[in-house]
Length: 293
Ligand SMILES: [Zn+2]
Image (cartoon, rainbow, N blue to C red; front, side, top):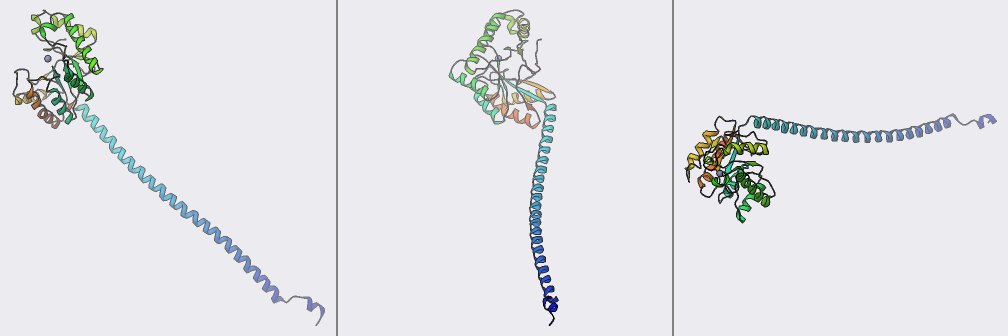
């Protein structure tokens, strides 16, 4: 055997080593690639889940948007209806009385607010009623303290004293002023002439100078035409009175004898509601209805 032939490694051995090295290299590359693919796959799964979550949120937002759009359309419809609706102002004069609570209960059951032109009645019960008128969200107006024509219409000073006294008493009980006025008998009453000629002209002008808004009415319930008016007459008077009027100020009375007014009230409210009328309360900004200007 020659020396050079002994030192040369056999070709097969070299090829084997090279093959093993290649296999190891391939295995390492495969492992690295496999890990990389797994990582990418995980990222893909996560991004798909995130995308599904975003889609879900988007759907929720779309639903919310649709609901809000419907609510807004409904509000616009209600606003338009209210703008065109016929308005009724129910007003009750001469309380508080033993019937006021019943009236308040009825108004409450229909969720309707009204205006009470109160007179000065002292005592625990009257005070309780005055407070409830306010806490129930109704409006109280001034109808003078005594309501006695011979007293209030004896002179302008006497009238304003009675006006002020009523407000003082009411303020003491409720902490609220009687900001609007209804003249007993209305601004064009003629009974006052017996006690002071021309007094209504003076009083209505003075009210304007003082910035006091007074309200008469354009619908009468006729509940003061008799001591106890027939319930059906009251219902018919109001319903026929408000017909064809865009705005109605309805005169009713709240005193101990006016039981039929209380009886008529739920029927009147139900009828008017079913005909689309809405109910509001008077305040200084309501366009007034005045017999004498
Ligand atoms: Zn009165």
